[in-house]
Length: 271
Ligand code: MLT
Image (cartoon, rainbow, N blue to C red; front, side, top):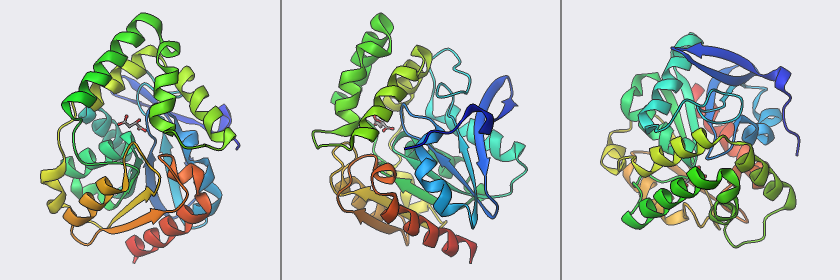
């Protein structure tokens, strides 16, 4: 799997925060938000398939990749505000906004805060519910471990959480390992705090009015198909696709299935 070079990245200063992003292709603007703790290269398998008809805008979220990592804590709304500032800076009226996992939590927050800027919403491997009390405890424990020992202290636990107990293609396991170890302590703690404190988005789902696509891997243990079905039942007109032989990193594991689904959805948003 190829990883983008530094020279492909652009940078923008948004109120003191420098955000790095890749801007590639021409057509319908589609802004994709990576999961935790990854970076924009997560979307590399989508670039060749989608850029004939779409302009892909792929930021490194605050605390990740080549973007600034301000001191924690972060709130989910900080990420959502960064995304809006980037849309404004690129002078775009509306975008199709997609996100995987934490990127999906952020996309839902964007959809609630500024629905008028969304031409469509893509929710991959994500859920609307907040953390359970137990889930929150586990995140707080991870924050304590990270404070004491950095990314190395949580890499094994995080890998297990993200990859589950299913066999993962070696290339993807290596990417996840490198992404975790390449994320700063600030980014890890900031994002863990944002996820632990995020509100339940379920009550808002019935108010989503833009076309919505939900994608989930049948073997996803972290954000399982049941969570995707609940969102699809609550969002008016949402389209749900279950991808066989895929776990949490569905768009990395099965690009040959996921890319045409996104491509068709972009056509629908265009029309
Ligand atoms: C992600 O993949 O973005 C995160 O692992 C999601 C989470 O921990 O809830």
